[in-house]
Length: 185
Image (cartoon, rainbow, N blue to C red; front, side):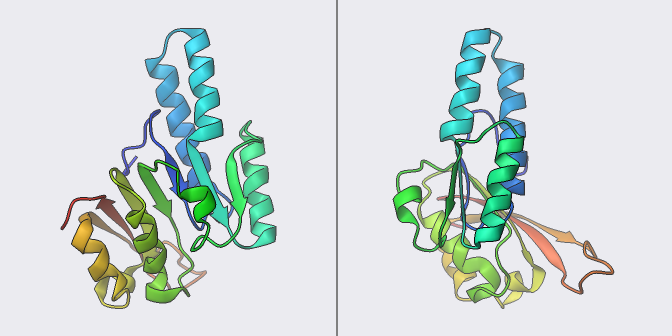
């Protein structure tokens, strides 16, 4: 919802894990279509288009990729654009995808605490929004030089502190950063 996802969004995640963000986005997109489209045939066509063409995910870990595929199948979509590969160099899948929504919870061990994924993805987008769940300290210096580069072309619209979300499991403090794409900060 923070990324303004609707039935016409093209949603991607270049480090999708088990595809939780994509499943949630698909649910929002399908509900939006059901509210706005009254013709049954038109709704069925839009539903099919959402599931087959408007979602894209990439995951490098084979066992996690399988979880993502299973999650999509459980949602009634075995034909999604879900790929096993490296999100950094998977342009054959992402190069022509007209992304308008980017969702990501990157691996925090990646360069810039995962902001390298964000910079690369936003460079492929010409409009829309991005929501990134990331280590909070990545936004206060640990994400350099990626954060600085991101803000040259994109606007930080919100920074939401997620206080103790992993209490008892991890000491990592996270935040959600929302970017408006292709609009310099």
